[in-house]
Amino acid sequence: MALKGNLQDFSATQLLHLINLARKTGTLAVETPQDQARFCFREGKLIYASLDGQDDRLVSILQRAGKITEELARTIRARSDIKDDRELGVLLSNAGYVTQKDIVDSVRNYVLEVVYKLFTWPEGTFRFEPNLLPVEGRITVSIDLENVIMEGSRRLREWERLQEELPNLDIALRFTDRPDARLRTINLTVEEWRVVSFINPRNTIRQIAQYNHMSDFQIRRIVYGLLQAGLVELVPPEGVEVKPSPGVPTPVGVPPTQRRPAVKRSIVQRLIDRIREL
Amino acid sequence: MQIVKMVVTGPFAAGKTQFIRSISEIDVVATEAKISRPEERIKDETTVAMDFGRITVDDDLVLYLFGTPGQRRFEFMWEILSEGMLGFVVVVDSTRPETFREARLILDTFRTYAPTPYVVAANKQDMEDAWSPEDLRIALRIDPAVKVLPCVATDKESVKNVLLELLYSILETMDGEGE
Image (cartoon, rainbow over all chains, first blue to last red; front, side, top):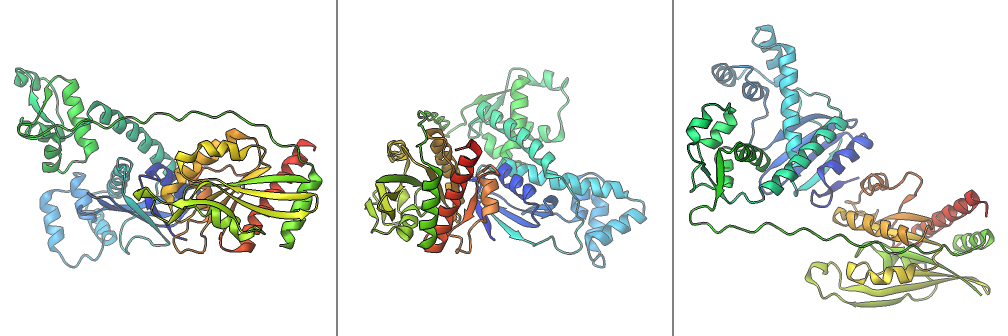
């Protein structure tokens, strides 16, 4: 039975809840105007995920996780005799470059990173293909969806709060007075530094996110932190019209309650008999 | 003569009119109008006030089936139609998940009108893209005690089954209340 629709109508939380409750096995493909992702499930547990445009082979996952060097990653990619990720995992583990735990944790974190992105996509089409599993040779994990839903919902709330605090990404940033003195005393992550390096009234927040391959959620979180720390302030971008934020829907009223009609059991039984005859 | 009334509700274009047509002994008295809004042009005509179907049991007893208009702008009609209903059927187009939220809202609204039993008809089960009744139950957060039934509104037997299951639920409720 097909399972397809749009995240606008059936949210990521609802979708994962359904897959979990129905203990489904198969692959969920989600497509938004910006991203495409695939999530594989076995008996209602998340076992694999991949994001189009991001290399999901083990070598890249380990490199991004900082478990292997760029040089080693390059060497591995140049070798054509390593057939699949499982084989690579065994080779790296036997050679002492990484432990089995490093591999499992890295894959698990990558899968979680991809699935948490799903929660921040307000729209996009999805299709669930029953019994379709990842390609042979990929390393899979087994993640309970309850925890994913809990954490995803928390992130969603954070995302919604950030969206309220920072509704417009088509706005620019500039440093407040004497930011250099304060920056020296604040520890910034690599991602935050990347954003800082692009702060300029000519660059909108959206453009900074695009340069750094960041999602709306990531850039909002970083910019919000910088704003709260008083390091930057929002300014209209040079030569760009600022869009107003969307309105909030009004709640619908609840109508009064009616009484149930007094109908005897025999009447219902007669209706049943009649309908059976039809 | 005793008249018993049941309401067939559900989102726009879910198949309510067809549901009543398949079982009614009279030509359904449909108050349909040409679609004016471009976003609703999924079909040519829509129910603007109500559909009316009838099943005569005998000289003393008649069942009336009322179909509600699916569009929100006719919501004022829902409460009027639900007055005195014995139970209701929520028809959902299983191939259009974009209407599930609306179906849930309609269901919640009708439950506030009267504490009558109801069933959910997962319509268009003959279509390839149809969500299964089990998946619909989860999607619509339907209580396990409420029946979510496979349905093809064009098929009389399928519609009969939905109505019978609703009547069985009504009997069970009566038994539970010691009627």
